[in-house]
Length: 454
Image (cartoon, rainbow, N blue to C red):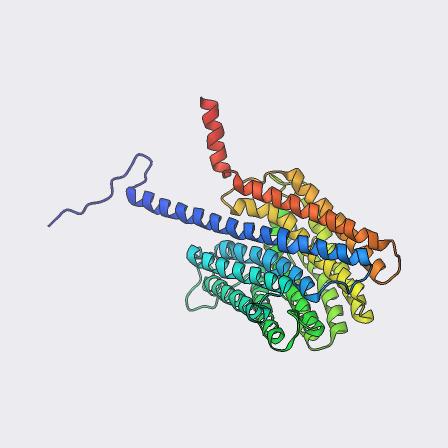
């Protein structure tokens, strides 16, 4: 009988089999990090080019003519789609592929599936922007873009949802934490938004004379994508990360669930035609969320600010204040139904809250997720957050004053706000692109040690 051959042990206790498993795991980690950087880089490209630049151009034209109805609705919707789906949506997909299975204790997702999702999603968002801006073959390409986005999201949903929490008995139901339940609810909301976008694209292609959603449909769609999934994603990941990053006391989980239910009810009521009641519920949810997270209470521990600007906890709290302002403006807008107030409410939510949270938390976690890199410049992080908030304050206040004809001089402030925000977004993109171009922290340490030894 042949003797059994075992892998020889080495001085450090490892074996060839262990080394092979470690190398396989390392290569998978590298693949996941590169995949995430691909998603983040694509999101930044959508944010800068079809998103922000088109938005600045739209605002310049509006302010120069001092009229809110001078821009094609298709252009405005192309800008919004690039920002919501192209920027933040791409970020969500990339972070979800990279982080959700890990947070729940499962195995990492397949990199091939993540890349297929990226290809379909990017093609769909880019196609939508081109068709809405240039109007080229939009009756065919606009529905096609929505089909590509839905296919991409279904790949994401299938791969992420198949992971179960660690150490669970197969006979027992998964025991999800509250933050995970909020993120799951946000994922369902995102699916609903992608499906509603598909319906809207086919309706426009079949019955409309322009590649733009009708005002009533667009209003319900905007309520769904903001309060139905974007805000919920931020609340869910805030409950996961902010207690650690900011040293917050234990989250009031029942209150967080209540905030989620209020936001969901607001979206449902808005879609049912009860916009005023829905707006009030959204305001209640926006006020409940920071109370649940205990953002404005005395912290249990000092905030973790290593590698980032020490002011970022302040900007996170300001962002949650912007969400309350946005919801309050939403109540006003639902009562008076004026375009300027609606625009101010949406801008306070999308820029003051959502973009600011991406700027603050994103620059905290994305470098670490992308191969344990260090943020290139905490000073650029501070400058981007400061300019973003200044630009948002100028935009929200001047939009109400100008559109409602309270002050003619406010029209001149609108372009200033746009360029201020554009500068902030550019700094944010430069900081992340430069961070991703640098070696991981471990490699930088080895290089520094090698230099010391030579």
